[in-house]
Amino acid sequence: MGTVLGFLSGMGIGGGSLLILWLTGVLAMEQRAAQGINLLFFLPAAIAAILFHGRQGKVNWKAALPAIAVGVAAAGLCAWLATSLDAHGLKKYFGVLLILIGLLEIFRKEQRKAC
Image (cartoon, rainbow, N blue to C red; front, side, top):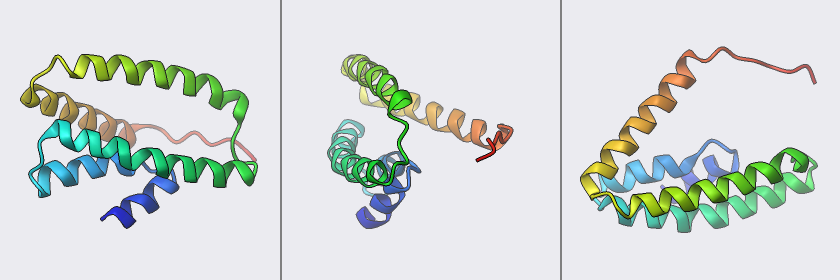
Protein backbone atom coordinates (compact mmCIF):
# COMPACT_ATOMS: atom_id res chain seq x y z
CA MET A 1 0.00 0.00 0.00
CA GLY A 2 2.92 2.33 0.72
CA THR A 3 4.19 1.95 -2.83
CA VAL A 4 0.79 2.71 -4.36
CA LEU A 5 0.25 5.74 -2.12
CA GLY A 6 3.80 6.96 -2.75
CA PHE A 7 3.11 6.75 -6.48
CA LEU A 8 -0.11 8.75 -6.08
CA SER A 9 1.61 11.34 -3.88
CA GLY A 10 4.36 11.78 -6.45
CA MET A 11 1.71 12.55 -9.04
CA GLY A 12 0.11 15.10 -6.70
CA ILE A 13 -3.08 13.12 -6.23
CA GLY A 14 -3.09 13.16 -2.43
CA GLY A 15 -2.16 9.71 -1.29
CA GLY A 16 -2.13 10.94 2.31
CA SER A 17 -5.89 11.06 2.62
CA LEU A 18 -6.05 7.54 1.25
CA LEU A 19 -3.36 6.44 3.71
CA ILE A 20 -5.42 7.71 6.65
CA LEU A 21 -8.47 5.88 5.32
CA TRP A 22 -6.43 2.69 4.93
CA LEU A 23 -4.91 2.90 8.39
CA THR A 24 -8.16 3.68 10.20
CA GLY A 25 -10.62 1.70 8.06
CA VAL A 26 -8.65 -1.42 7.14
CA LEU A 27 -6.04 -1.65 9.90
CA ALA A 28 -8.35 -0.22 12.62
CA MET A 29 -5.68 2.22 13.80
CA GLU A 30 -6.59 5.12 16.09
CA GLN A 31 -7.13 8.38 14.19
CA ARG A 32 -4.32 10.36 15.86
CA ALA A 33 -1.77 7.59 15.26
CA ALA A 34 -2.86 7.38 11.61
CA GLN A 35 -2.41 11.13 11.21
CA GLY A 36 1.08 10.95 12.70
CA ILE A 37 2.08 8.15 10.34
CA ASN A 38 0.57 10.12 7.46
CA LEU A 39 2.76 13.11 8.27
CA LEU A 40 5.87 10.93 8.42
CA PHE A 41 4.88 9.34 5.11
CA PHE A 42 4.06 12.63 3.42
CA LEU A 43 7.25 14.58 4.13
CA PRO A 44 9.74 12.38 2.23
CA ALA A 45 7.22 11.79 -0.57
CA ALA A 46 6.64 15.53 -0.94
CA ILE A 47 10.36 16.32 -0.90
CA ALA A 48 11.05 13.72 -3.60
CA ALA A 49 8.17 15.00 -5.75
CA ILE A 50 9.11 18.68 -5.42
CA LEU A 51 12.75 17.96 -6.29
CA PHE A 52 11.73 16.00 -9.37
CA HIS A 53 9.10 18.48 -10.58
CA GLY A 54 11.28 21.47 -9.69
CA ARG A 55 14.19 20.17 -11.75
CA GLN A 56 11.87 19.80 -14.71
CA GLY A 57 10.75 23.42 -14.34
CA LYS A 58 7.16 22.46 -13.56
CA VAL A 59 6.94 24.42 -10.30
CA ASN A 60 5.76 28.02 -10.35
CA TRP A 61 7.77 29.19 -7.33
CA LYS A 62 6.18 32.65 -7.36
CA ALA A 63 2.79 31.02 -6.68
CA ALA A 64 4.16 28.14 -4.59
CA LEU A 65 6.03 30.10 -1.90
CA PRO A 66 3.01 32.06 -0.59
CA ALA A 67 0.95 28.86 -0.70
CA ILE A 68 3.64 27.07 1.31
CA ALA A 69 3.69 29.83 3.93
CA VAL A 70 -0.09 29.80 4.34
CA GLY A 71 -0.15 26.00 4.31
CA VAL A 72 2.42 25.78 7.10
CA ALA A 73 0.50 28.30 9.21
CA ALA A 74 -2.83 26.52 8.62
CA ALA A 75 -1.29 23.11 9.37
CA GLY A 76 0.09 24.41 12.66
CA LEU A 77 -3.24 25.95 13.64
CA CYS A 78 -5.22 22.84 12.72
CA ALA A 79 -2.76 20.53 14.50
CA TRP A 80 -3.17 22.67 17.61
CA LEU A 81 -6.97 22.52 17.27
CA ALA A 82 -6.91 18.75 16.67
CA THR A 83 -5.24 18.17 20.03
CA SER A 84 -8.32 19.57 21.75
CA LEU A 85 -10.74 17.20 19.96
CA ASP A 86 -11.50 13.66 21.05
CA ALA A 87 -10.75 10.87 18.59
CA HIS A 88 -14.43 10.36 17.71
CA GLY A 89 -14.93 14.05 16.86
CA LEU A 90 -11.74 14.07 14.83
CA LYS A 91 -13.01 11.14 12.73
CA LYS A 92 -16.30 12.93 12.09
CA TYR A 93 -14.63 16.16 10.96
CA PHE A 94 -12.21 14.26 8.73
CA GLY A 95 -15.10 12.33 7.17
CA VAL A 96 -17.03 15.53 6.49
CA LEU A 97 -13.92 17.08 4.92
CA LEU A 98 -13.46 14.09 2.60
CA ILE A 99 -17.13 14.15 1.56
CA LEU A 100 -16.97 17.88 0.79
CA ILE A 101 -13.79 17.48 -1.24
CA GLY A 102 -15.35 14.56 -3.13
CA LEU A 103 -18.48 16.57 -3.93
CA LEU A 104 -16.39 19.51 -5.10
CA GLU A 105 -14.43 17.20 -7.40
CA ILE A 106 -17.61 15.68 -8.81
CA PHE A 107 -19.52 18.92 -9.42
CA ARG A 108 -16.71 21.37 -10.15
CA LYS A 109 -16.62 22.64 -13.69
CA GLU A 110 -13.34 21.96 -15.40
CA GLN A 111 -11.36 25.11 -16.15
CA ARG A 112 -8.38 24.61 -18.37
CA LYS A 113 -5.84 27.14 -19.48
CA ALA A 114 -4.43 27.06 -22.97
CA CYS A 115 -0.78 26.05 -22.82
